[in-house]
Amino acid sequence: ENENGGRVTPSVVAFADDGEALVGLTAKKLLFSSRATAVYGHQLLLGRAFESRETEALLAATKATPFDVVPDEQGLAAVRVHGVLHPPAELAARTLAALKESAERVAGRSVTVAVAGVPAPVDEPLRAAMAAVARRAGVQRLELVPSAVAAALAAEDEFPDELASAGTLGVLEMSGLSSSLTVLAKRPEGAEGGGGGWVWEVAASHRQHGVGGESLDGALVEHLVRGFREAHGIDLSADHLALVRLHEASEAAILALCSSPSVPVSLPFITADASGPKHLEQTLSRAALERLIEPALAAAIDALPAALADASPAPQGVDQLLLAGGAARLDAVGERV
Image (cartoon, rainbow, N blue to C red; front, side, top):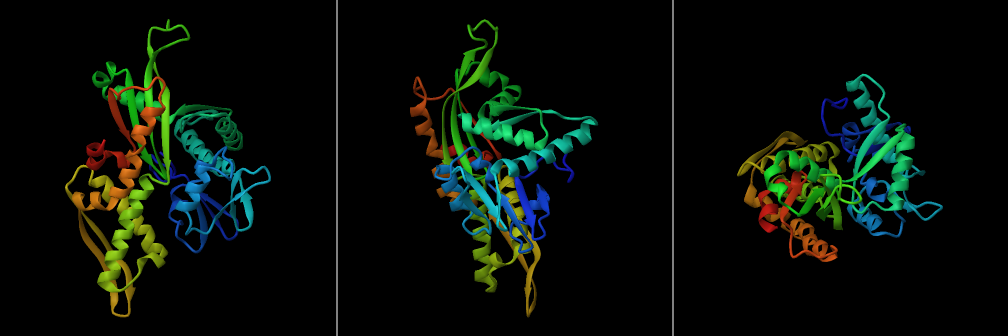
């Protein structure tokens, strides 16, 4: 558990006007604050040039935020806050250091080795950037595992029978500011196949930037803001505290709708005007949510044919399809693929 008692630490770093840096959930709550500048999505920039698809995606997703994505002296993407240039490795290291501190508190001893899930393929610029992250965070050894492989290994424990006979596995991931479809092939373990077991190897991967879990949350937040404006004539998008509550409620609602046909969205005292306090009360159905997020889902799932085409040798399909990430648990995702 982290210092907030949770098992998930958001990859958000916030800088107050006095220069103080905050990490994780505390930083996430300042995403829309005028008291601090919160940076997110910077992990997309690790090892990437300023002129890259990753930078374009982050610029498009964060165009309304108060931080800038700019080139550094080597032409690599960096983040500028309050006039100070922050390499992506520095920002990512702050999150890794917070995770390391939480692990050490629970384990009661020093943690010097860590495993990180990263997008496939793991190229040399990304390896170099992650090595810099490890050094800055005080981690002596950082093992990189493609996130799709990590998902497959976890799924083998939960679905051993389904995956035992699968020779190829598609892993659809929807999280943060991107989605991806990775085709994994099962290969004999060891250089000559003499290890006696099997391992999953990346055959191909196709990533769609700018479309992920954040896109789904954002679509629902826009819907709630629009409905409240029509009902009360008040624009909640200009209210920092209201936006924080709306994003938290949207995340919770999407997760709840993975298993329930409808869910109440209740935000009492969301704002106030001269007539008194205002409350946001709405029941959201799974069908309504699916209509809202349809464009984002379509863009994410379009990665499937491209990934299959890139695989070598190109399979006719995949034996099993694994959906990873909170948003991927929605029925609409499974139905489309």
